[in-house]
Structure formats: structure tokens, C-alpha cells
Image (tube, rainbow, N blue to C red; front, side):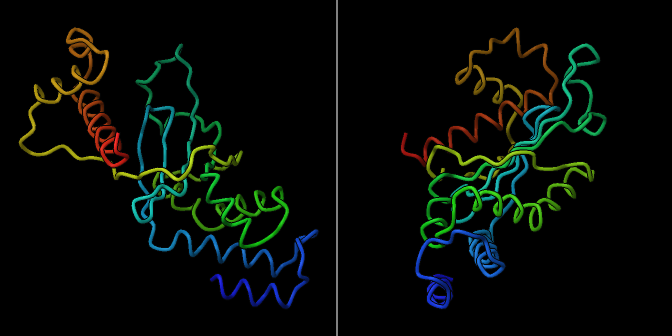
Length: 210
């Protein structure tokens, strides 16, 4: 990909592009396609009104999408399933260092680059989210360059067959501010989700060396 970019740049003007061209747009699409080639998409339901999607490649998170759904605490709160909620907005996040690498390889205006990244995502990856959520009203309303550098990515955890509910509760009590009385009010599903989330946090910290 880098050699292809160099060859095309030689054919074009040897300066920063002041105006977008179809050839430059194809270059950006190609760069992003290479970046995500072989990447895995992970779905993490934070709450009924928030779902996160992560694309990971080589143990690094390269794309993060946050979907927000209607959250009206007056009509059932978190008991209302996502499929019955109105979609509010979607945010696309890409680490700033990834965008900087792209800008260094293809010298275009940052504002134009951001626009093309969002267009590329909608053209190539958005359908995967829509399919997973089983609805076609999902969209991306904003794109942000995440201020942090590319983060370690850990796939969502699964509960081992031999893990008891009491063992899950013990981990939650040790690693959160929850007390046993709080946990007794939660459903088995909520307790398992808390346990898996904390298990994943522990693994991420381990890989980061913290």
C-alpha cells in the first residue's frame, strides 16, 4: 500500500493536496481497507440504551463505535429492551495516532480526511453493525479522533462452565464499590455481565502492564 501511494503521489503534484480528487479518495479507502483487513468486530452491550462495537487487529483497537438509544427513565428505565428503543445517535472513534499515520502517508487536509473516513466507514462497515443489531436505522452522526493512542484490545470474556455465581459475586465485591446487598437486588444476567466486564478490565490492565 505504501509503495502504491508513493507511485501515485509521483504522478500527482508533489505538494499537499489542496482539493480532493477521486484518485486521492481511492487511496484513502485502500489505506483504511488495509488497516481493517482481518480485523475482528466485538459487540459489547453496556446498557440497554448503549451498545459499543470495537474493531481489533493484532491485539490493538483501531475503531470504536458507540450507539446511543432513547433513555427515558420514566417509562421503564433499563428494563426496556434495546429493540424497542428509538435510536438516538452513533459516534465513530478512531485513535489519533492512526489518523496521523494516514495523514502522513496521504497528505490531504485534515478536515477532508475526516470526512472521507466517515464516508468510508458508512460504505464498508456500518452494515455489519446494522446486521448485528437487526435494524436499519443505525447511523453515524459524528466522528472523533480519540486523544489516546491505539489501545490494547481484548475480546469480550465468556463465563467458564465451572464458575459459580458466588465466585462471580466475590470478584465483583473485590474490584468494585458494590456491596452484597446491592448485588442481591440484581438479576443473574446483570451479575454475570458485571463479572465479565471486570474480568475483561483485569485482562486489559495486565496487557498494558498496569
